[in-house]
Length: 425
Image (cartoon, rainbow, N blue to C red; front, side, top):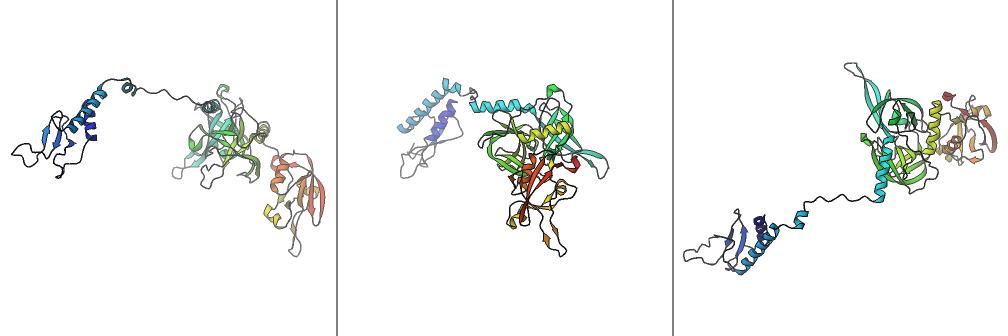
């Protein structure tokens, strides 16, 4: 080691090759030998040496003072490097891991405590081989979910299980169970599954509330993006009371939570947690032209999810009241210069038709006669279809509501008794 160090230091003191104008200059160049240096000098060595051949000398030969100084420094450095010291010995000691900060410890604890509640859902579809005609089950999608209770109920998004012939749920300990669909709500993109798993394997997720959330709160998403199980992403609440449309029915989902926590394909159905580790929403969608996370994710609030899950567990379906009308797109009504919901069709067998709401139609000459325009329900202003859905979501089947409509050039108030959807009656 000493020789190597002296060689290294010697190379640091190299000068340029001697020139004819400076005959006494000396240059050092390392050669392949470990013990010698080639010294080029213009000084005559004997009467017969006029071709300035290089001499091969020991590094301790008597040469110019500058070279002696360089050699002395190199030797001193090599002896110092060769001698044992505390510093050189400590260079091989592995440093202890750095202590985690308080917020890091809280995040680690949150992940460890909630991971057992998050599950991986595989959507299997039946396919027939084109050549052998064998019927096979192949994965057609995957997503996330979470344990709702000790009875084996699993909550996820409807679009995660849509079109599945069979479903499998994988718990955090990698045990897998066949799952049965208990029920689903296409309008709100929520589904409930059931697995027959031992109760000691099921850890229900702690359920919080979403009514008092604030923009800027820290949130955590746990899911299985791209099949990478139990992935944690963090962010904040970027917005509240957003609105997205159900992928299945197109019906708006109100009061959605917007977050910048990364939500990618496979995160759907997974939980969105607050900093205390309680459930505040179901991760359901992202806004992204590329299909990957762009910092705009949406979660269905837990206050909405809770009521839906209770109905699905008890009845296997959600009984949601309707007016029984078809209405025009909001843009069409805006072009008329009015605010409200234009009734296109109110079938006589539906609640609105029974109450006397009028549909849009054409007269004998083909001229369009506009139907009623709903402007309020129970005194709450209705400006568009989203407003109407928001009001109906707060009502129950059998409730009587007062619908105010604009009919021609005058307003009327009509009492309507809400009924369930035809396929839910």
